[in-house]
Length: 354
Image (cartoon, rainbow, N blue to C red):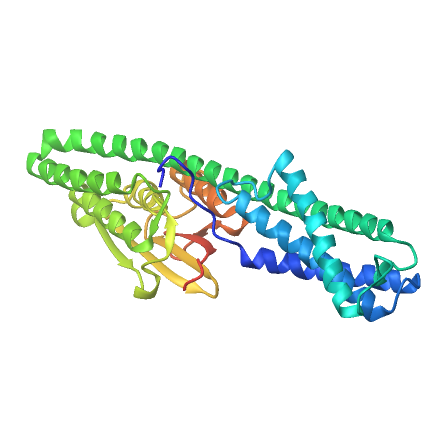
């Protein structure tokens, strides 16, 4: 097989069955109309209509799927489409008429009983009109679905590109902050600076491994967060305490990469660092119905402090990432704690599990 050729699309039985049912219903309407016009008895009209219509449908459907087996467009274009429709008309009329004659007991003077009063021309015209009409209907529906699929693909690609852009903006922001802190430690505490550098290398190695994807399991997000908190703990010492709470049944839920780290960074920078005693950060994941709820809770200076003007760079980026990945279904809330501190609550739909 030539590797340069596109892959063969499998036969779509669902679409074929749907087209066959619509064709059969259309044939019943034609039979009812001809019966009312007193061309022949109802059962004769029905057999002729179904035999001609379904034969035409079978020829066109099989030909369509075979001719487009390597094409993303589900209908043959140009002369192939016209030739396929003409073949469906001719074979449908010839085979269907023969089957109708077998049922009705032959023909009258070379004319099918279905059209005994008007000759072959009305039957051929009816077959041409019906086949072209139903083929045009299927073509327009197929083209509409194809264009919708292209639009959805373009939107998905744009969303992934936007997420990657946001991630490239977040990484330097975190890295510059860490390097600035490392610079201070090198002068005052070389041993802690070395420990912080080791954690930074481990964090960047994990980040590089996830850089080719816009989503990863929630477990990977928590692992990455644990590396980041270990990095910050070297600098802050006992002033930083943290708890990570991830239930096992949510560990494989897909989430956008770098979703939690900006929230934790915001809590450390604007919540814990302004306090002499530091504080505690708790990151939790839980299920609420069909939604995933992620919370970052800190015991810092609280939402009303001057150091929390609107959430800063990290929260703005998380809002952008939620809007890009989930639209209006992704939300983020900032909730002030009753005894100080702040809770950041992120919610979005759970992915359906197999």
